[in-house]
Image (cartoon, rainbow, N blue to C red; front, side, top):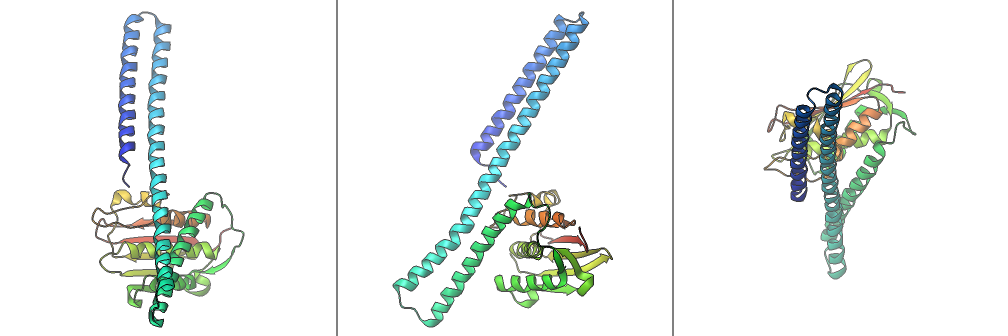
Length: 301
């Protein structure tokens, strides 16, 4: 994620100011030692005071830079959400104005309706994503907990992804190694559907040269159910594997830009944790594809 030029300058200024102040404090400390070299108590008190000053300056600068970067992420998130909302609204408005101003054939009308419904779905997904992300940090327990068959849920999400992205069945393969009770956990079906859908959408979006996604549902042991989503897309550099689950963070390749709010994988991690599970990502690097693994306990109080 890039930093705005103004904030890059501000960060550089604060770092330079911190260095200058630390250098000044060290100089004063050295002078104090030279002046009070034979007086033990003033010497010790002076050294401690200067050490506290230096530590305070460093801590203050670090927190200030982190706040600048956090504000940068918030601005990037607002810009992304604005785009995600504005684009489908403009599209819907254009088709409605066309339908109002011109006589179109029944076939064109059906096409327009289909596009507008697709844009409406995109708006709804964006709004739901933002709302769920806002509640993710506060929602400790589920009000509607019930048995959820992850095999059936995975099949539904795969069918939805094929339809949403207009993909053939072969583009998103499903391998159900466990079904029925062996694939059943206790949790919130809507949130689990959101997690799986986000993993699938992520796999599709990061496959610019052709979508080849495989979804596996298995049981690594008697206590857990595992869902793996593997793609052959752009891959993820090792340095990014832990950062991609951060709120607002969006991994971007230099030659390939992906639109989004930066909340999808953050939501997946939050939902996994709220179910007592975990999500991990693995990749051999750029151009090698990636694998996301969602592992959940079969029962979670």
